[in-house]
Image (cartoon, rainbow, N blue to C red):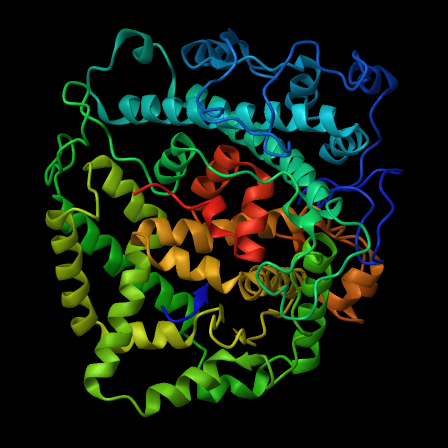
Length: 574
């Protein structure tokens, strides 16, 4: 569309980096009750075992390191099977089917992450305190470990699908009880999230340490005139790295093992009664129905008297800007968000625009929203993967365009109303942010958990949209030259990535932060972890592709491209 859209981490322990802003915690963020710090034995397990860190074996440079070799992501360390922790005997049997394979150079780090009784913020404290080379090596382990857990989880999920739909599964799968597999996959997801939290903390620390005391001018640096330190650690991409970015930036289409080419599109697949067009059309119709209920119902002109005051939104926006600027302020900044200047009521503004549209323009707006769903929704990506559908090929593209054309005409009004009720957007041309102001404070909620959670959710949306406004125009222009799915990765996926990096510096229990987000009345209530939704709930599916790009080219290259416009540092191969 013409605008960028948006559809708990453990609490800090004592010590660590001193915050530069009173609303930021000195350690990693949290939205669960505080827990005791690490026991001395755990801390000792991560003490340096070499002159510059705790790594026993040599490792390749990580994304945080100034040097980055071609092909690093694929050249993983030796692989071995390793057991899972904290599982029942049956769960351990499931784990034996899907053993993790990456060998962590720091097994003690992995042990701490897999010990779910250990607070994540305590692990981040240790990582932040390491010297640069040791922290880089740690990031390497975290990146490869996360990849491995994700790959293993996907393998287990496929086995679970076999258990549920295959009347005669393979013998080893037949021995696995459905509940046992679910238990194992749930555990794997929990560990993935813990690795992500530690990794985002390390990425944020790298950004904050880039140039101490430097703040970008409002509107960002003029291209080529940024401090040299902001380009430190960047490197020109090799041909292999450009291919790695290309492959990471869009969901992979299966490759035929014989021809080594992309697998042929399968309009109909075994075990699924509906064909590809039917599945896509049905999903989009369900999506229209659910979004209309969520974003439109009971939100009309008669309800406008109950909207939340603008000063609440300006406070939440101020909190989001201060959090983001504390991490990325050396790279880019924008002026404070003010009502009717760069902070606009989306429902009112879009309503005025729609009132003057011709019938053809109304259908066009509906079609644009549907195209957005097609390129960004998780379920569409899953359907594409199952059918080996590649939207860049003529056949699949023709099917998708036909469905968009059909539904944009049959559901014009619903889609326009959804567009008007969308939660938040940022206009790349003007950098104005558009938000909804609906209240969400049901009767009987004495602690106002629902409304407080809605405020925190809005704060997370503000972070995401503010980061869109910091995205360099050259980067946006580059993304627009790519395929629709690649563009979504470079824009929405990468902005989701940056949002989570910045959120890794948030302390939800900080009184000043709570007052800005929850308001002066609600902030006096006892802190409740339920009020802070996990920021990953707001991520786009293409976050995963964006994170793999970071692994492929290194964090310095990504920051320099996204914020400063040095797009050749991330440009994919054709």
